[in-house]
Image (cartoon, rainbow, N blue to C red; front, side, top):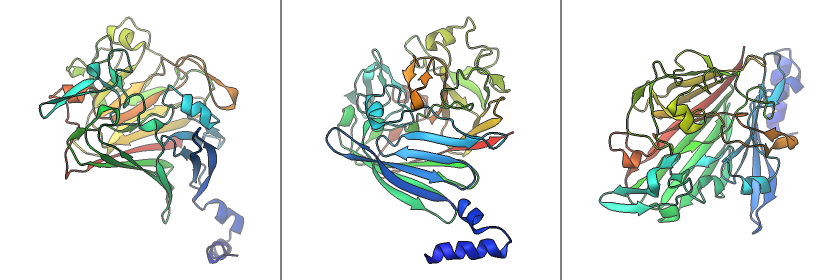
Length: 377
């Protein structure tokens, strides 16, 4: 018996509890094979457990969150993120379930931008526009992975080197993304990157949530609060017009908790463009401040999700383009059965000088932090 386990048994006995209870409360990270790519590359699954009812599963293919289990108000645990049971489905996935999105999350108009007088051409993989890093974005790359074990937190650190010219972007970009699960039922995501040439960068995670349980039906009864007085309106191709518009007197006003479905089909131009919500919100905050961006409550289960971020924007997507994809346990994910809250810089910032800059230069370090915090009431 190892010294650490003996210590746990003694500590539990001294406080009058059982040694098994002490072990159950111990944060753990476990690693096992999830599958292999067609070329034989092994893909691993990392399971993070905080001993307080929350578990997160992450694979190093795309850094994807493949499961996230959290208790409801009665203590019943359910998986609340959409995804698949097997690696092959993730390889074929077109919804970016749970993935790290880069080099540039969201859209860049007409697949091009100009930096320091030079124009760069990117894949037009969303109609005439570029989206989520191109044909082989970061959610389709194999990341180097290592387990992280702190005093109270457990996690996994992922690393990837994106070579100069990959998907049309300049500069060799070295990226690390660290997922840490805390005793406070928080999944903390730390992003960091450097480049040897001027480039643009905008990283996020594309998890889809359903707080009633993945595959349980539409998310329209979830109540959402977004800490934003303004949003970036879009044209018919979902590219921002450049305006920062007030949410007041629009269906995009979530400054008070509101059912996702309350106004989603209102006769509004912005909702017609997105077939529902697919908009970037301008968060009320100081630059770089880690603060509350959104809160979602699901009344049946009582589960609550809070999103905190250092990013200036938050993309709220109501799953409008899900079309009956076969997900975990054979469940079908239909339209609006999951929602995304993607902390980010604004879409098309490289072509919008008035937006917060997404330029990263040699000698600088890109950093951002996003936290998903889970509770029940």
